[in-house]
Image 1 (cartoon, rainbow, N blue to C red):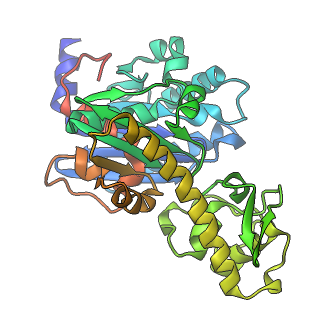
Image 2: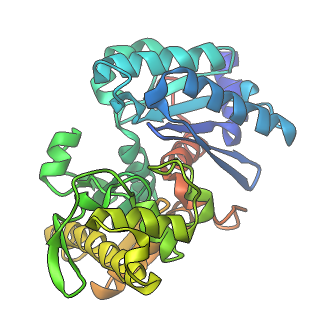
Length: 364
């Protein structure tokens, strides 16, 4: 055991952080002063085989640049247990752990984040309720390690997480998704997969307020694609009609939300409709941020992450807050990283926390 621990500590910079979502798989690992971050489509609702395929892609991509991840230690967090491929969240946690172990079982160590520290496979299964959907806490712990006071906000493809930090400690009123939603610490809205009719029930169109069609004809990716704000690398999910991902088709899909065809109005009308939907989503997130800041008025820093973080600088400015991207806030000065690093905060957090701590093999 002592020899194993020595080996682990000697290669701490090579701990690998994984964030296993219901739609995407994200992986991050440090090599010397360079951060490697990758994101893969992983439609886990189709079945656990999707996770296996995406993880194999990640392992192969690392090998292609000369890094064998199977020789490194791994820290795992997840939200994928929520997909309806699993009968219960606990069943999802167990299935994901079994899949991960089958692929990484020969690694130096594989540990699972339970909201406080990383635990073994056996403990993770016993603590499935704690392991489930704990990725936001991994990110929060990383911010709390770096900053005495901040509000951390992660806008992803499907959800927005908000977490207050005060005195280098996490401040939260909810633990489960249910409790967090009730306390505006989780807003079920994101910039890729949310349906526009979840942003509002009616919208101003052609001079009057009108209700929206209660169908999933379009998603927020269409909104931000029309507005040319959606990062191309974040656009993994399929379109609702299976047609191409371009502005014309996005306008055509969005038109159906007001029971129209694209040809019924000029393209400028559909751009305005997209802008109005974006404004509704921004307001949802703004309200949640304002509610969290009200609980700690002395907080003056907003740390943003996720593919939808492009919404946050303007919100921070309106509230008189300083804005920082997640990676620049938590990573050592001089770390080399890509512009997409902040899309994968939980994975980076686990890699960073492992990198900066000399803990026992059962704790970060």
